[in-house]
Each structure stands twice: as C-alpha cells, then as structure tokens.
Image (tube, rainbow, N blue to C red; front, side, top):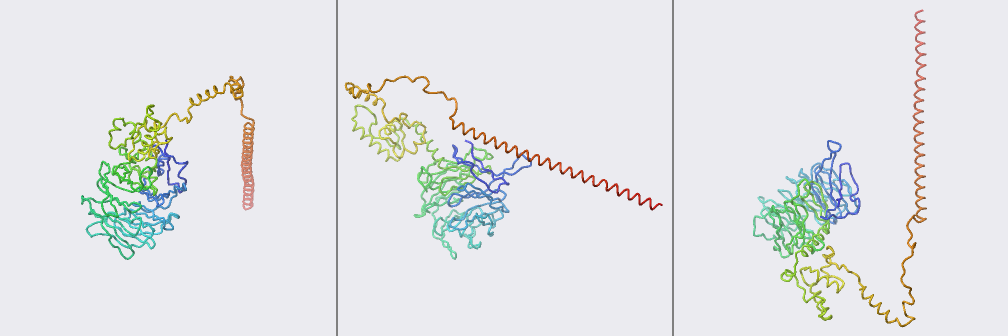
Length: 570
C-alpha cells in the first residue's frame, strides 16, 4: 500500500493533511511528513530536517519544528496544518502548555539558550525568557498551564507563564547537576533526578519549595536517570538511563515495583513514556521505550514482555527507518516518530498491536502439536473428550463441552486447538470471549467453512417422508397439484442489446447538455478572439494616424525655416 505523504514546503503556509480517509499500512504507517525547499537546480529539492515534535493533552494537535526554526501546527481533528512562527534559532525542545489554559500556548527552547512562549491560535510570540547558560533539552508544564519547568545540562528553572518571570532554580548541591525535572499530572509536585542517581519529589508553591520524599536507590548506585515518565494516575514512575534497564517505582509505596530490561543492542534508553488505553492490553501499564539504536519497544510493565516494536534497527539512517524521538497521543492511538532521515512518521498503534496478535496466533498454530499441547505447563488443557463419538451419550457430551467452554474462559493462557475450537463453535455458535478478538484476525483456519444453519440432507429426507405419507390422499398430494419440472423454453432470458429507455434518455440529455456547453464556450472564445483582433487593428490604425499627423507637420516646419532663411539673405 502506498503511504500517504505530506510535504510542508516553504511555499505552503496552511493546507489539508489527509487527501482521503487514512488507512494504516501493514506496518501501521499512516502518514509521512516531509519538508523540502527548492535546490540549485529547478528539478532538485533540499530536505529540511525536523528536530522536535510534541502532542497536546487531548491528542488532536501536534507541534513540530525544523532545523531553521519554523514551527508548524497540525490539527488532525480538523484535517488542517498551518505555519505558526519562524524563530531566530533552531529549536532544542518543544511542548504544549496544559489544555486548561486559555488561550493555549506553546513553549520552544532555542539553541541560543532562551525560552519562547507563543499562542497556538495566532502564532504570535508573547514572551521571551532567559536564564539558562546551556540550551534547554526538556520542558514540562503545570496542569493549569500557568507554570513550566525547563531543564538544561546545568540547572532547572520554574517559570511563571503569566508574567514570564523566573520563580525558582532547582538544585540539590552545588557540585551535583540536575538531569531531569517534570511536573506530575496531578497535584503541585515536581519530580527531579540528579547526576548522582537520586530522585526527589518536591511540593511546589509560589513562596516555597519543600522536599516531600526521595525514591529509593537501586543496587546500581552509578545509574543516572536521563529520562522520566509518570503514569496518568500518578501511581507509577518509570526511569531509564545509560543502560537497558528501566526501573518502575510505586509512588504510593515508594518502592521499586518492576525492573524491566529492554532488549536493546547498544544498552541505552533515550526516551520512555507510558501508553494509556492501548487496545488488546491492560491500560496504563504499557511502557514505550526508545533504545539508542532507533527502535521503540512496547513493554508490558506487569509481565515484562515485549508486545511489539516500531522502527527498524537494520535500516539505513538516510532511509529513515530508525526513530530518534517519539510522541504518543493521550489516548494511546497514534505514535509520531522523528526518523533518522529528518521526516516524521505517524503510526497507528492499534493496527500494529492487532497485527502482532495475529502473528502470535499464527505462530502458536504452526508450532502447536498434540504432544506439546498436553505437556505444556503454560497451556490450559481442556477437560473431557471433545469428540462426536456415537458411544458417548448426548447429555454427557453436552456437559463435557460446557465444562470445557467454561474452563477455557477461566484459563489465563491462550491455547489454540483448531479441532476443539471448531467443536465448541459448532455446539454453541460462538467462540469463548477471550478467543474472539485474536481469532477475528486469523487466516480462515479457525472458521467453519460450512456455515449452513440448515442440514439440506435432513430437509430432503423429511420432504420425501411427508410426500410418501400423504401419497394416498388426493387432496394433499403435492404431485397432483404441482406440475413436473420442465426445462426453460428458448427466449426466457433475452440477450442484453441496449440500455433501458430512461437510461438512454438521460444519457442523451447529458450529451446534449455537454454539446450546448461546448458550443457556448466556442462562441465565447470566438467573440474574445474577434474582440482581441479588433483591438489590435484599432491600435495599429491609431499608430498609423499618429505617424501621418507627425509627417506633414515636420515638412511644414522645414518649409517655413527655409523661407525664413531666404528672406534673411535677401
């Protein structure tokens, strides 16, 4: 399937995003956003790289910034994009303010170490804040939208977005630098991580900043948490850094809840984010982790399993298969990936999860054998002998099938046995509930090919029996009432030679209408050509008259001058 492509060239200030209803490809790709500019040759174009992207709280709008400081707003709900602002420097961090604030604002950290605040409705820059000595790499806004905390390599600063004033600078000790700071989604608390591997939660007010608690350190004291994320219910905090371990902390118990290991090659985690409401899995416990090699791993925090991935580790960087940065919508439906080619790709996570589920079902069907299904410790065996043996009583068979159906519903693991599932489907008319969604994506292997609800043979036998039973009664004898079957005579199905009359009339009317429109167009064209010709002829006539008028006057002047000279001589 050909991917949808959107080019935000310099000539485009606004426009539409989708040309048609988006349909995800097999790999979940829905849209690829590029930015090009004219090159030295008219047929050449230069690729302009995107550097930053950010989603709003609702998940309908996205901001993106390129290498020249141009910021674009993409509204997927209205199917529109527009150019917001051209900043003086490249963007190093980008974020929306909370949706509670009106008007909605955006924050952009620039390479000149300043922080710009603009409005998404008008695109105008309303504030410029300075206070960092190095470029900003992280921005987090308060849930009310009136505060923001920015982090650079040397410090973190809390800003007032109403007055654009610096409220407080966060630090632990002078010799220990801060790595990351963010506002929690609920309450007035700030979570910080420092260079020594410690994490603190601070209660913030305008006049005070008080430490509430410290999350416990892991066994590896040298671990530095460079990326943090908080679940939507503020129950869990996930932290990752320069190895492939992701620590998930329980905020209520203030303990380490899970230790996840990302199957990365390079052994470093660049970005993590909780993914809520993802289909086919339990919500709020899915973690998206970006490894250094450019692959986003979706991990189940409860079971520590890898559900699926986005990105290609073997792709050439210029082709854009590796992910450098990503953002997930609030509903967990879409993922925007900043690729190694400088483009932005939009993926449908539900489609990827569903396809991955189908692949797991197909793999289990291919690898499952009767011996392995009976001996597997994780599989849930179906009790009873699910056969249609005539020696088994019908009532006992129904009881065993019902027990097997209920046991399949209660079992935690999915075991795909085509024969047993087919028997259950034939008996109850439906699959167990836990099998329905995965089975709905399979190849036709788990469906009954004979879906006729009525046994044709039984109907024919019953018809013959009834016919023989009433054969003696002349009043009820069907053969006496109904004629014998006869072949159809010639001409019952006439050949198609022409369209119906109303279709031909409509076609003729349309053809006549087009002919009249063409004649009118030709007449107008002829009048325009005649008018243009007449104008040219009139202009040529005026030019000739001007030449004629100018010629006699010149001769008269010359004659007058010569006569004056002769009189003077005499």
